[in-house]
Image 1 (tube, rainbow, N blue to C red):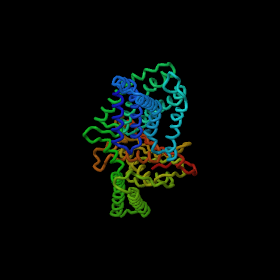
Image 2 (cartoon, one colour; image 1 turned 90 degrees about the horizontal axis):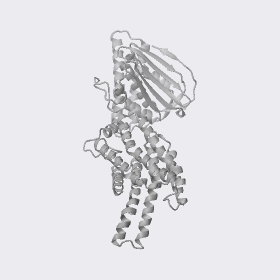
Image 3 (tube, helix red, strand yellow; image 1 turned 45 degrees about the vertical axis):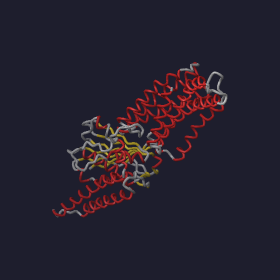
Image 4 (cartoon, helix red, strand yellow; image 1 turned 90 degrees about the vertical axis):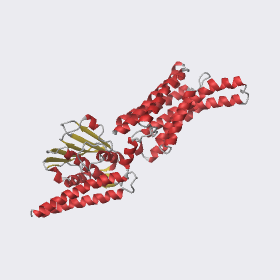
Length: 468
């Protein structure tokens, strides 16, 4: 058990030293320290007591201290391990950053109450803890934590982050599931108290996963490899204001140039229509205003994107996005279906950029023409924006990486940085929404973005279908 103590505490210490400010790191380090306390308890009972007795050091003053240290270490493991594990699983879940501050503030104290109450129960003479009560909360804590780890891995769309979550789940879930039986279920239901001695085997597997993945990929911020970790680099780049601002400006400058060329061409051919001219100028003004809005949003080169929430009509913004891209829709049949005519609360400038990016991708997937469908609808709890094209579609391996920073299928585009869908995914998630893509080669692509209805104001419901 000395191996368990040294191994777990060393990993816990390395993790907390590597990134002490990150809440997930603090909680997974707590798992390592509480689990190591079980090893410390066994070391005291199996090694220190015999050693002190053989050396003649086990005096009447020392024996009670060792006994208390053993009991304290044992209870820290029994009561602390399920609690720290379920807390880590909660804060590590993808949706946790979007919880309300009040919910995040009180949850640790609410979940701490059952472990604390365990001290009020007396353990049977032949048992270290009151299993009849501890089993009541420890089992759902551990099983719930395992479920959250697996669900979080399944939900993650970014392949780099998914790999990190998969490694974390592989390191934590089997060990905690095994400990659930050896520490709680078998002693409580079958009176088998010595199965915990098999824990070092599964813990060795956990340590091997952590050490091996740290050398190659990094584990929870712990990077032993000398090479820079690509995930860390790309995540910092995608959240930097400079990268996102460059991407936004590139799109809007392209629109300004496109409509400027159109106005120039119409003027040279003396075929200028005043209404079309006004409409083209409005698009240029809207693009320039969007650049200003994006610059205003980005406060510094390394700050993350901050949302500026306001109420607006999503159907109106979607129409504006299509108007700005009108010259690129030649040969494309555009169908607009706005089944929701109310308002929503969000960052208008950021969502305009998101929808423009997705629409641009859709039209670039149909170089020879096709059909583009823009649909805005509502469910009981969600507002749904669907953008569907009849283009080339994507292979399965491409679909898995579409949300990865700097990944692009448009290698021939000199100004394409591969930031579009990563940026879109980030913004939609910041709105507490979801973004999913369905695509098959030759069958087109559908992008679904869902936003919570609590950010929507009730408005007139109707339907309008337009084709161009």
